[in-house]
Image (cartoon, rainbow, N blue to C red):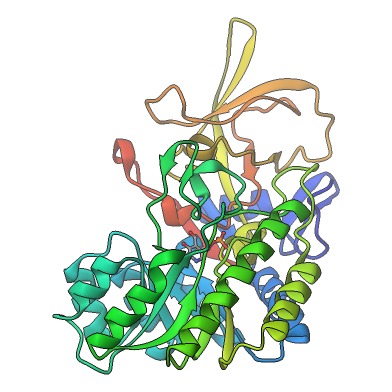
Length: 407
Ligand SMILES: Cc1ncc(COP(=O)(O)O)c(C=O)c1O
């Protein structure tokens, strides 16, 4: 199948295997619903990502794992050992990263609608804040001492790139919805002056334009924003800011469907680094903040078919999970492949709707998908569930959270 990856995700003797173990057996051993992640796959992807950028960069490279994608403690510890830094979005995430052993100076907080209480906690923890608004700079004056180092999250002023309009984070609006993130390009110098007036040190400039982009056109859009960020970095240096880093955020996407292209990592790395070198900007490090790219394809959500029914000719396979465990299909109309673990080699000959156990019409993992006919007791695997899966899970309908296991 198109999603098979040697020694990670494979069909052997008609059965789905993850990390060389039969997925259905893993499900029965630990119980379902279950998130299964393959540690080795995460390490492999991390190394490929960081080494590709390092190959082209003439400066230090920092890979800040966007832990909002998956804050499983084992994954955090693994990425810490691999040398990652952290992108945290809440004081709670920052605390969890500290507990997983990340030193405080390897964590950058980038939040939105950030309260004074959030900032107080971060300052107490000694975490650097990447400021999202002028208001935040003003309020920080009464919270952080003079000399505090901060960075500025800027909007490049051109439309961002993303796989879905709800994950676009740059530009004025997305689908008519005003975008809430970052300081507009025209306000960055004012923010830096204000920060300086308060005695703060602006040490970083940051952008994050959207999530899950993978086409060449989307990478081109990103590269246009790189030019704007580099130009702004030069202006900040000219006004006396000693920049330690420039961050290009996250966003590299993964293939959820066969016709999705592979993210052009080589080109992304090479062209970004070439632009940095050509700009001549002065800073020590380049930062990247991948979340999805590092963990999405490492994970499966395993769930059991508990009820098969036919309604007006439709086959509905009811499972012991729901959008409280994986919200992407409902929130973003996202497509995830669904694999029947013990029938992975069988002919796909039945049109099936895979439905969750929540009291919501929209609680459906896949509508009218052609797959081998499921039976009660079968284990279904949701592909690419390693990112924005468990980390977005809830107790809706008072259902328990799924288990997680790192193989
Ligand atoms: C500031 C910031 N950096 C990085 C990311 C990670 O994005 P992705 O998982 O698409 O790489 C996000 C995601 O929302 C973000 O808000």
